[in-house]
Length: 265
Ligand code: SAM
Image (cartoon, rainbow, N blue to C red; front, top):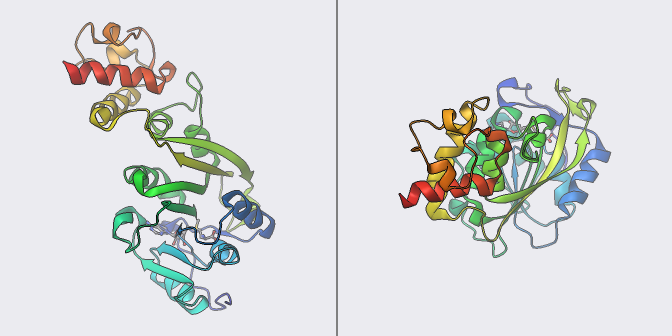
């Protein structure tokens, strides 16, 4: 399995920053700790740096790559019985349609293109019952938002929507020099493990998402003002929330309590 010597041009629009630091690759694979038989799915294999490191630990890997030129290189570098490549947009990916239903769920990994990392995360969270865990290399700021505590500057919609369905843990930072070309920002590796029992039950999820979206679209406003029109007077008190509180101080259980009030109205 050799790297492609005739590398295609680097496409900024696809968020291409290729990992070349072997110690970081080893650390990422160590964090994933792939076991023989694991169903691994890599998002954006690019030139195959992480792919190659993973294939030292598992026999077979699925991957989704949008760039046709890179996909061509990957096909040349890895035999199809080792790497099953899906050429297309990961944002359209339906795990149920990959043709396999791994018993333990998919282990999704990737050095994600930063421009799609948040929508991709939400897309995968919508299919979370197919997922065992996810390990992503992301912009450090996004990882901080994923793992923020209520009351902190980074706490927001991403934190709450993620915490409703999964646990997220920041593992370690990765400096710009580990990539080619180096990105302008620092990166970090995050582990996301879906909860067996989501913190917000499916029947309330739509209301919950609506409230969270609205609350954080005006995070400087109090709950009373920010949610005006969506909730009625008394709903916040009925949910045990202080109407003068700001959304950044409300945890998942608080937003869920309000979703329950709205649903039962
Ligand atoms: N895994 C490689 C590495 O670590 O060197 C490449 C990582 S690079 C940050 C992101 C990769 O995702 C690129 O190969 C890019 O072409 C691919 N990509 C970008 N947008 C994508 C999308 N919507 N669906 C699938 N792959 C995408």
